[in-house]
Length: 309
Image (cartoon, rainbow, N blue to C red; front, top):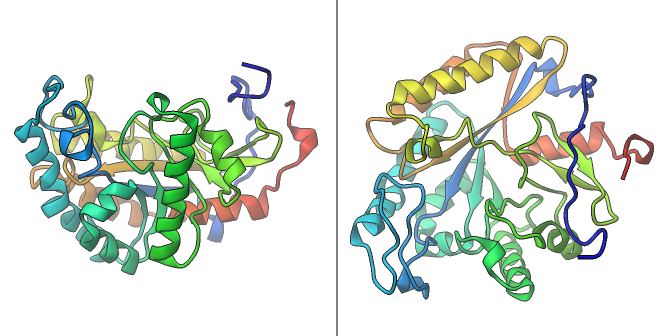
């Protein structure tokens, strides 16, 4: 590909001198919980795919090519039918909000829990139109899916989304987001504990890194969590480290949640304990992803001379 037509790599970042985040009210740490809204948009021949889903579920199976896998379908259905309501209650009982990583087709399949999350104050970060690997699609198809996601969020909230998280992006994803024009940021990166600016495609674009370690998907991945205490302990220890460092160098912590995983009765206590633990500390900002993006764009504007692109 010609130079500048795909994302670059940067192994240097902020080095040992990260910018002072200046989170609201002198917070040592910004914590964002992302609820992934995916159920109903996964691989399934009922969705026009040629095989069944295999990823991020309590059902560990190979793809069933040309047929349905009722076990994994039902496992996903639990998230839509039960798990989302359990996750939502953990936040609303405490007057807290977070972010919905919204897969467009999943919202069409089950709008009810999503409507409740919007009413509770959650922001929407599109997570693709389908929960699929976007590197397998044409550029035109991906462009269409991004446009559909933008229009969906406009209809749901009255305004376009600020951010986007494909999860399985293509080499075109970030460029297409920038060309689309509505997006301030995307979250398809796992390389930092603070937002940062990139000019890969000749326009300043904000990156809010996501996390796969403080993420309940590890209940369904190798070297992952087995019981609620393991998830609670790992996220708590991550919080404690960043909170201590935040006395002089405040950072952000993203916690990823899935209704079909953490929404199970044997795991939900890890979330309620985390929320109570974090809110038991002073100078903690539990916030939406859009809040972080707005703050960074206002207090840490892009400066050309700080970038080597």
